[in-house]
Structure formats: structure tokens, C-alpha cells
Amino acid sequence: MTATYTVEEVCQRLGITESQLHEYEEMHLIRDVPLLSGDQRFYDEETVNRIEHAIKMKELLGSSLPEILSVLEAEEDLERLKASYREKATEEERRSVIADVTTLLQSQVHRIDDRIDKLIKLRENFDRKLMRIREMNLPSDQPHSSETADGQAEQR
Image 1: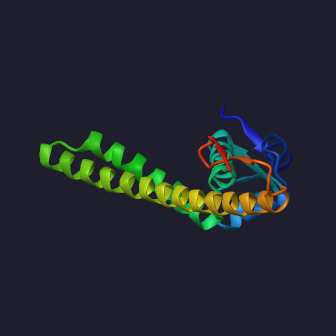
Image 2: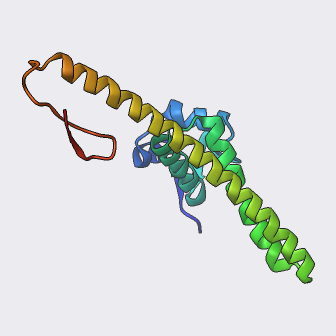
């Protein structure tokens, strides 16, 4: 029998509130959660892992829930394509599946690269502001050492 978890157990395990869990359901990040006794929902391990993956993407990438849903759907598409690859008999059919997988993965890499570029620009902007603030607080005859975005010390 597959392990199941109550709403309270899922929330405690993942460090989220019930309202966050329900928000994930409303955004369709969670699908088909059965009601096993009365109005109590029970989540299987796969669903809990999906929620945990969504939370990590939100924390690490700063993604919105619609963006997370898009990534999760792309991952599901990838799994379907892998299964389709195994079922395809001809070399031409398999090449078609490989082309689809390549396109899907390139799209995800591009999305991550865009996010990284935006974060780098934001970091550079904050570095410039920090340097200006530090320069305002120093006597003019005192050298100033600051750290650049790449972590290298720079003499001013």
C-alpha cells in the first residue's frame, strides 16, 4: 500500500501553511487529491514530492506559481516523450521524439538563462549602489576597498 499523508502532515513536512497548500491546488500544481474519509484529503508520496519540487523552484528561482506550473508541465511532457521513445519502433519515429525532447529542454535552459541574466543585472545594480554609498561615507584621503560582483577585492 502506498503511504498517504494528511494536510497537516504535508504542511509540517514541507514547512508550509494549509492556505499555501490550497493555493497550490487552486493553481493546479497538485492534481487529483482523493478524499478518503469524510472531507479529509490524503496526499501520496509522488504528490508530496511534486509540491516539494515546486517549493524549491519558487525559493531558488524566484518563480511565480504559473511559471512553476509551466516547468512542471514541461517535466511531465518530457516523461511522456521518454515513454514514447521506448514505444517507437522505427528510427524515424525515435528521431522525431529526440527532436521534441531537445526542443523542450532547450526551452527550459533558455528560461533559466534569462532568469540568471536578470539576477546578474540586479546584482550589478546593487553593487553600484553599494559602492556609491561606501564612497559617501569615506574621508577623501582614505583608500577604499570594495568587493566586485565576482568576489574580487578592488582598490579605490
